[in-house]
Image 1: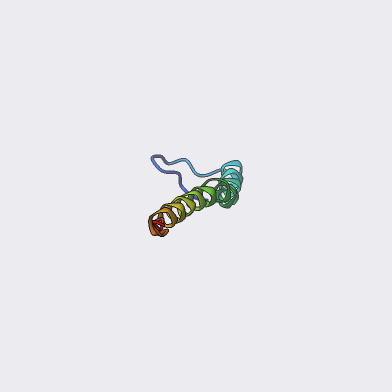
Image 2 (image 1 turned 120 degrees about the horizontal axis):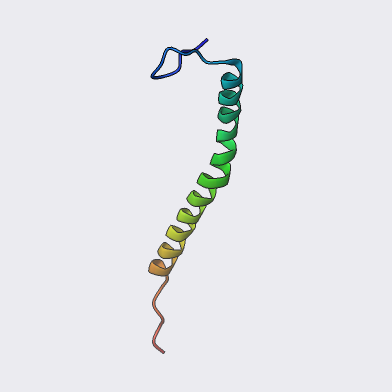
Length: 60
């Protein structure tokens, strides 16, 4: 059993199961938070580059 930080008490079976459950939830949180944020940043950069790179209007 693991010793918990800051004390001499050992990790119980309930604590171990909770820690394992928390570790399984991390990839789900990444999908919900990080992926949309990165997509928004990339989209913003793409729009800025498109606006800056488009040709000026040709005077007729």
